[in-house]
Amino acid sequence: MKEKISNNIQIKNKRATFDYELLDTFTAGIVLTGTEIKSIRLGKASLVDTFCIVDKGELWVKNMYIAEYFYGTYNNHVSRRDRKLLLTKKELRKVDNAVRTSGFTIIPTKLFINEKGLAKIIIAIAKGKKEYDKRDSIKERDDRREMDRAFKR
Image 1 (spheres, rainbow, N blue to C red):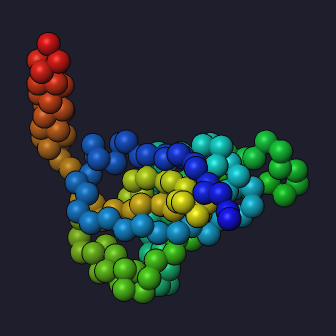
Image 2 (cartoon, rainbow, N blue to C red; image 1 turned 120 degrees about the horizontal axis):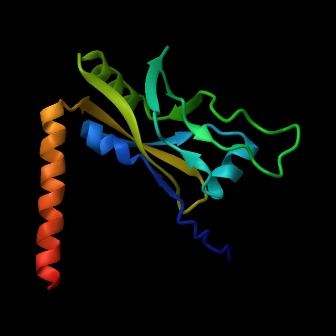
């Protein structure tokens, strides 16, 4: 009987929820090389300034940083290369139609390792927030903190 892989690797894009209003989410697989998955399992990846595009019916993640694997030799990967995302045709059509609408974009929000040991990424269809929306988010967060502090006392 195989043992379950217990990886708690969850790399989040904290800036995404502040800069964008997330409307719909999808879980996608990522096409990776051998040293890339090893670096992700060590937690050496970042989703800062990452975005997705639809090109010729395929979904690609751009500017995602995965550090070079320390023990990788000449087989090491490029840290900021474009990586293909795997979605079903129905999901891909839905994402493509949403992006064609003005003002919407695709933002990766979380990178994680599932129970089978595969790297997955959660992407969201998002709409950019205006400056006043960001101020409202900050005020809401501060109010929530104050309420939590009051309840603890």
